[in-house]
Length: 326
Image 1 (cartoon, helix red, strand yellow):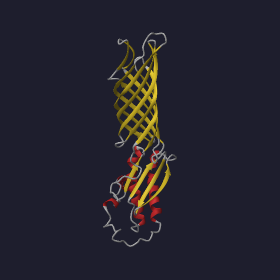
Image 2: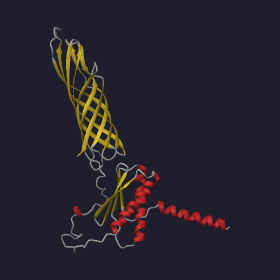
Image 3: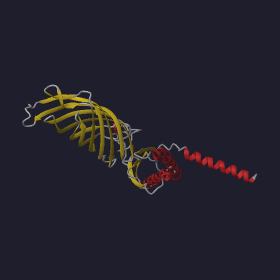
Image 4: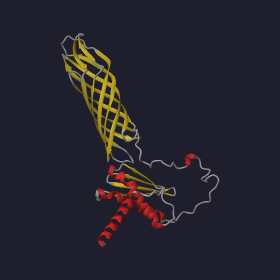
C-alpha cells in the first residue's frame, strides 16, 4: 500500500505540473512571433507567457509586467524585443547550437532574463502630467493599438528587375530581353504581381532575315510559402502585348522586305523561388520560369500565303531577378 500511495502521489504531481506547463497563464503580455519555423512559432507564445508568469511571481508586484514581447527569427538567430512601460529593449540569442526541441524554452528563458534586467533598472523621474500630455487628453492616434503587430513583421511591396530569356514562335527562336515587376503581398499566402517584358531577337528563314521585337504586360496571382529566408511561389496569369516583325530578304532573292506590327498574347503560368537576405532590409534575388500558350497569334507571310515566322503555339521563359522592398 505504501508503494501504491507513493506512485499515485507521483502521478498526481506530474499531471498537475504538465497541466500548468500546457495552460499558459493569462499574464496580460502580448507575444508576437515572426518568420520562425512553424513548430517553434506554435510553442513560443505559451512557453514565453509561462516563464514571464514565473518571473512575476518571484519578483513580486514592484514593477508592472511588460506590454509586448516580440520574437523575430533571422538566420538561426532569434531577436527579442521587450516593451516595458512604453520603452523597447532588444537582445539576440543564437539558435544553431540548440536542439530543435530545446529552442522554445531557451528563447522563453532569454525573454524572461531580458524582462528581469530591464525591470531591475532604476526608473527615470516622471514629470507631472499636464493637460496636454495626460492620458485623458491624448488623441486616439497617439494611443497604442491593442492588437497591432510588432515592427518588421509585415511584408512590404517589392520591385524586381531582371534579365529574360524566352523561346517563342514557329519556328521557335530564342529571344533575350528584360523584365520589371511590382508585387505587393496580401498576407503570407497571396501575392499579386504586375510586370512588363521586352524581348529582342531574330531568325533566318525562307531566304530572309526576320527581326523580332516584342513588348508586353502581364498580371499574375502568386500563391506561395516561406521557409526561413526562401520564398516559393506559383501562380496563373495572362500576358498580352505587341510584336514587331521586319523582313530583310537575302541579296539576289528578288523578295521585297515588309514590316508587321500586331497584338499577341495568351494565358501564362509562372513559378518563382526567391531568397531574401534580411527581414529588416528585404533585398532579394529570384529565379522565375514561365510557360504560356498564344491565344492571339501573329503570322508573317511570304507573298501572303506561306508562313515565314509566326508568334503562335506554346512559349517558355526564364528570368533572373533582383529586387528591393519598398
